[in-house]
Image 1 (cartoon, rainbow, N blue to C red):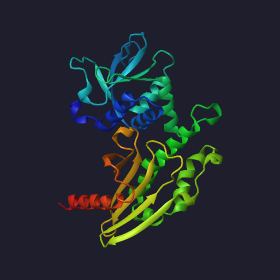
Image 2 (cartoon, rainbow, N blue to C red):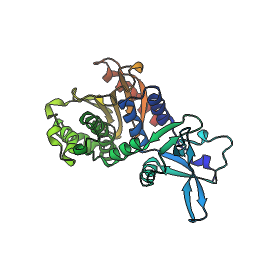
Image 3 (cartoon, rainbow, N blue to C red):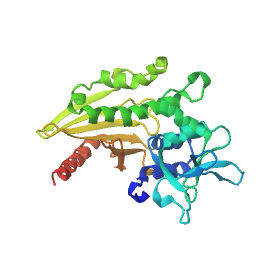
Image 4 (spheres, one colour):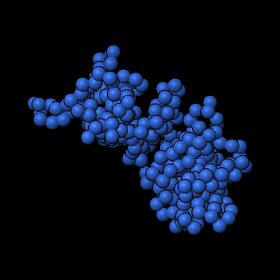
Length: 302
């Protein structure tokens, strides 16, 4: 099969990569790590005749450090590439492979002939921590605020949408300030850090409106404290009770404030999301979200 038929959509990843390259802060790094977490990459491989097994290529930088190259799409391959083979792997598989390789390889380099983003083992270890969702406070490998940011991100962009699109109206009917608070508390409980969980049900405000027979909307105001970049200020669930067509929108605190302090995004059923625009001012978001939902329904019937 032509590898182009098995290409990767890397638009969101490239956005996070370029944001991090332009402004390498902890927040942009975490945004990149979270995007990489579920991504596929292409890794050049060769046959090791001596060991009779496939192994990845390695390349050296100016300091003679060795890195495994990986490409985020076919378009990022070098024009004169002559690799023996190309293997499509989950990024987290690459992380596990490199962390088990000892000190021979220093990390991974994404798109070495264009973006040339080197990801050293410290960042790979952070990726692995996030994947396991088990930060080790006792060794201070991750700060409390970073943990709060990561767990909040996971709940808002993974847990809630996953439950919503999986259970649909069953999830919506059971949603309350108390159930939301429990979802945010759960990651703390899992790692015996519940004493650091500072939200209560009073920090969540839910308002549901029956707009008309084919449109209901739920506005969820999320906690204002510990609201870090990439975390959500509010969420909107809009659905048609007749067809169970559901859309989910969030107002996210931007990783790059130059594009606006808060961004409006749509979270899709498959876990992906779309950047829509700078979020309207508070009080004007709901009307705009209802217009988006109306347009979404029309697209489905055409």
